[in-house]
Length: 463
Image (cartoon, rainbow, N blue to C red; front, side, top):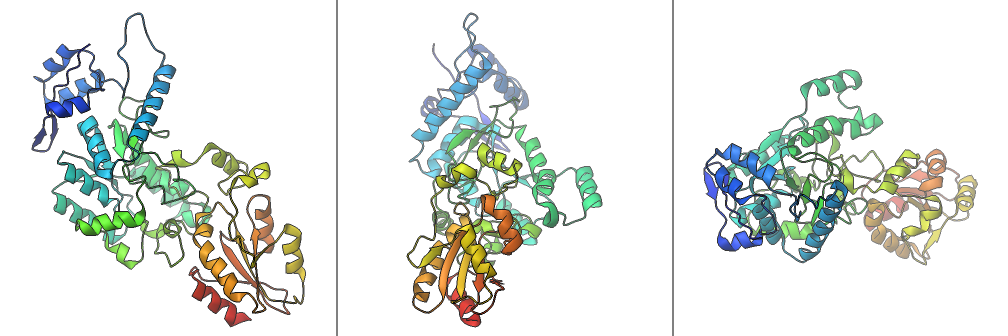
């Protein structure tokens, strides 16, 4: 069966026609009927796109035969397997190569999701391919003024128009009237994000076959450590509807944060001015703040909540089923516990750090006059923010060795979490306590600056 791909992709006044070599690259997209496609070229561009959506099969899908029908389940499995293979094939490809492949394959049926942060790199990569591209963004109504000005700067720099999606005014009005403007500080951010971000995104994606995101594996070890280059989106639907109808591309999945910034500086790309104020991960103004030395970049988002799943719902497919089950069971800390606690490698491992058991920390808390002052961290090994301060905490323990101040750790997740919240002032991970000599009342470290010098100043002020 010979395959012919003959069409054009239009964006504003620019027309892109694949060359013969480019046609070969996309030859694995099969066309049901050559004559139908050729005939569609005489229709309007809008009609052409509609006709092409009906005629183009899913990625790698095989043509249907009258006596050889494949079930939807088998088709979905086949597509998943081929996307996994494509992800493997592109594992060592550069973000530019991946972006070019995505735009070449899907043309006007793909768009870049732009949050107004360092994911502007995606737009630069798309620009460098020389292909037409679309960009959309979610305007929640609660963004920083700097972000809105940044959107304008990006549009002017690249000569594009960002396709903004807005939340439903009636839904926002109902939420604010019933719960106030800042309800997320009291009952979590999910409801507000669902109204202002998730539902507008769902509407945007219903007009696409695939989308491009700026997810990186190093952004959130708890939820993004296994992000592939390309995947079937497990949470949203595309233009064809149904499970598996939307593909998600993550061109910078394997790129480190500092590599993104090196690229932005080298290419002289405009960036959000909030980055120069200590903001790394940028979202809505009430839910985003700058981070301090020793903190993970996602710690600036929803800082009043535990670090179990720093996701707003746009990438909720990253949260594994066991994590969802743990949340439903009341653990709320992003990992299955009980018999599974050994599945996560422990941290703060040093001969200078004493590991407390439940009875050990209870005894320390009950002592009216401890023989030595103690510095103890309440932690969860899966927590990216606990992981981020591991080096500084171990270094601190080494500096305090022989000083009379003992350093310890207590794993306070899972079954120990309620006890730690009730008896040890646990708010979120990590929580650092100082147990003074000759006192039974521990003092909670009030700062989020977790470098060695700041922690040492805290100890010296109290011992």
